[in-house]
Image 1 (tube, rainbow, N blue to C red):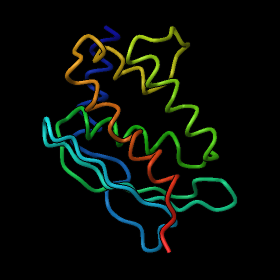
Image 2 (image 1 turned 60 degrees about the vertical axis):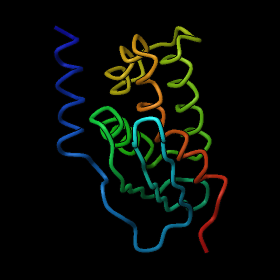
Image 3 (image 1 turned 45 degrees about the vertical axis):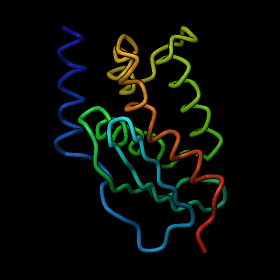
Length: 139
């Protein structure tokens, strides 16, 4: 039953991604591309006083990549950059099987993907883009 809910959540985010588009004046941005499958994402953030005020993404990819990006953007909007980085690390640790961590909210829908190692990159791609974006500043 919970697997069905998770699968529905992934499908919803893949079909109707949240925060898709671009920001008028991002403070940070980054692009990530996975040459093995063709997934790519460009992430834009507006960070003010260490808080992610707004976030948007563009790109193309499989349902998992699109859903992972959509879920990530909804979860980190309003968080500090440090909170966002910490959440990303927890997710990466859990999806790679390196840690048993408590419930990660909607991110839990993506955890079963750890059984398919070739798909883990699809789910972690937006988190890599986030880290790259936070290391850059758009002027």
